[in-house]
Amino acid sequence: MNAAAVGISYAPGLGAAQMSGRNPSRKKKPRASRGTEDRSPAATPAESWLDRYLVLLLFLALISLTLLSAETPLLVGLLGLALCVAGIAQGPVKVDLWVLIPLITYQVLSLISFFLTFGSTQSDMVAGFAATQAFYPVFYLLMAYLDEADLLFLKRLCVLWAGGVAAAGLAYFAFRAVTGHAARLGFIFGNPNAFGIFLAVSWFVLRTCGPGPGELENPWPARLTRLEPLILAALALTLSMGSFLSMAVGILVLAVPELRRKPWREAFTFTCGLLARASIGIGIGVLAYIAARRTGLPWMCVPVLLLAAAAALLWDQVTDFLRDFPAACVLAAAAGVLVAAAAILVRPSAVDTFAERLAMMRNGLGYLTAKPLFGLGPYQWYLYNLHDSDIFYNTYHIHNVILHIGVELGIPAMVMAVTVLVRRFLKKSAPGHVAGFAAYVAHNLMDTSFFYWGVTSMALMTVAEPQKGGRKLPAAVPRLIFVMFGSLFAAYALWGRAG
Image (cartoon, rainbow, N blue to C red):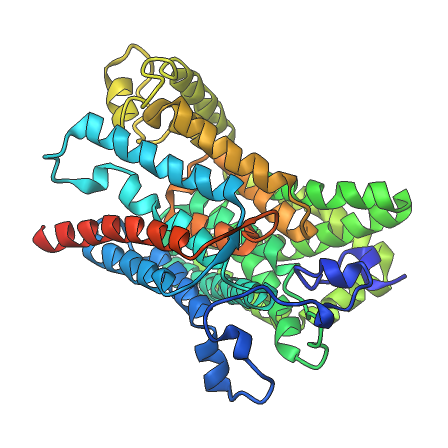
């Protein structure tokens, strides 16, 4: 029985040419960021990193958007402006217009909705989505300049960032528990649900970060797998039922193709491998939460979390054990039922919360056709709900992002968002990409993670494939787009400085 049969192998990511039997080294690379095509094996590490300045810029933008908030418009505006200046320096590009055009159109519609609601004299630009969500088309267009090796490198950096944040989150939870303030882990996002889906997407993307062509001697991709128990344990501490459910959707997306291509026994073993690893990591996190909140001895969570650290160091041996002993793998997968039951028991309000979100969606549907062209306006549903006869839900976003976009920005903006989602699902991609994206979309149908920059940026940088199915654009077109968005970011930065 090979490793793939129990679901513990890590696909090389973006390796369609390799899977089809073609030699990827003979394939001519598309033009990437300036200097990338001149990269040679003899380049020093410093030169190699400088050649990948677009990758590093995008990665630093992800870190910044994870830590910054819309209340720092000067920094946000300068960051966006720097990205646009880097884009202006590029040349022609091949990009999927079925994604790029809807993303740009969405931003234009968002701006129009903002000005129709507040007028040009509104001083608080944070009230609109356009200035902050304008990062997404800029990211997408910049990523189109990256070749496959650079996209894989960017993805690995993103997963490394997620693993580092997960490890810091575990330490933060332990500190809070010892000082008597243990609670659901929201950490740098300030929201457990957003942090949960951030980690869930990272877990799926981790599967596509294995060694690529010519990297069999490179130990770094293989070592990334050791982040898995840390990511899963931190995910468990969020107690985000929406993230757990989204994770189940992603696992289903991975398992169904296996069932179609292989005999049911192999597909069953593969799925058990996924569930077993998830059960071990999440089980450690749930035990740590119970120790911190339900035993009266909150410091007891510390040795449990040290178990997560030990699992990370010995994760290769753990996965080898699951591969060599299928019965133990099945038993660990079945234990996931107990883990799920324990998570529900320590957070019994989750069922009532889900029912409330369904009622919130029903309320939002009533406003969908009130102003169908440009919507009620950014953050206006909150005010409408405050004064209508329905329950006041005391939140600024309907917990269904597609519906929320339709209500506040209009049905055309909602159509643009749906177009992007459908187009991404139609692309043939590595299973880990599809599963991660499916988990992200599922979460946004019952929560609001789209409005957290760090979460959406993470999903975009790890699962988007801008060149696939794209068309070649002359240099003038992307430069014009970067100038347009650069002007928006510059205005945002100047407003922030004046404020």
